[in-house]
Length: 165
Image (cartoon, rainbow, N blue to C red):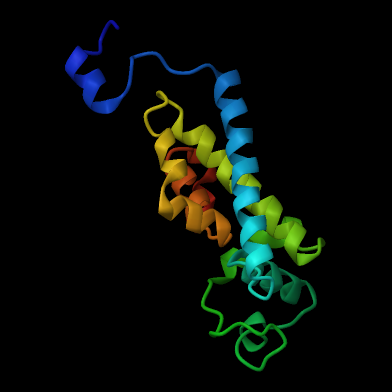
């Protein structure tokens, strides 16, 4: 434990030894699968509410069709969401790689990727942050296909910073 005092280790949960890349990758895949299971479970309970990423997916498809997604989302519109669309256009651009898929498979790919990246990001220096995957905010975010796991991962993986654009 060179460089890490016993007090610092007790407070932070860090041992001074980072997990191997292989261990982090395995944990990331497990958290991606966990996120997909949460999202699928929510889908079974609420099939009419596909998840927040569904809005970005629809926006991407609308752009590819040459339509304005902001005119198509909301009560009584082609994408019957309870509220008007408020996501920025960059969210639709980020969804373009999965726009060719049906909505729910695209959502599951997004949730898997977001949760796996968060799993990889949170284990960079140790396993101390792993309990966040059992927290209510994570469970709700993954189940609802929200952007927050991806944004949280992007805070520690510089290559993902473009998602903040």
